[in-house]
Length: 293
Image (cartoon, rainbow, N blue to C red; front, side):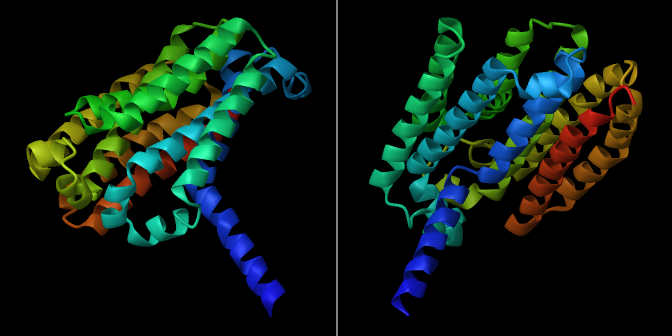
């Protein structure tokens, strides 16, 4: 009986850690970096050569570790708010004490530093900058009016600039992809503010719904989604093989998201809207493999 209880506690701790570092998001980040490198940034490199590229693997690993550490420190500062907005998730993630969370945070960042040092001092400095900006977001910027959303979206795409600089590919199509991704992440972040209104209001976070109201927040979110149609149009003009179908499908799908957003009134409905955008980003990542097919 006792060994079984220990195994259950062990599994719960693993699940807690996976939730804490947003394991799903880390997986999508790593997948997106490899697919972007193979099909967008360096299509001339074969898959095997890319997989065996130690320096590229080091950059991707450092990105994953730094981002995971970022989720931990963000969770640390958001504990009071999450206890209101996501009580069940809060209980799961706090099976690991806050002291242990901080230890994991420092260990992940140290590991990222060591791995980045295998590439170059420039890469080390890049990830040092990334770590500092994540900490600033979690400790200070997240509570600031409107700036937090833009800052958060920029942080999410920063790892992709690490591999862009590595391959030294600055073609305009890279910026179109980055703009599309940035606007979708921004829209998702704005929807999360609507979803988390109760905890943000209690903890005095200066989000758009708290400072203004839900209608204005929805309007600004809608602008972000509509702006995504601009890079969508520009990308449709590019030679992207079967990935064209994804961007053509973006038009009706994002239109549906807008309609659903304006009809949403409850926290659950906003969660659905958030997940729709999250799902579309994941489908977009997978569709990168369709380029040149």
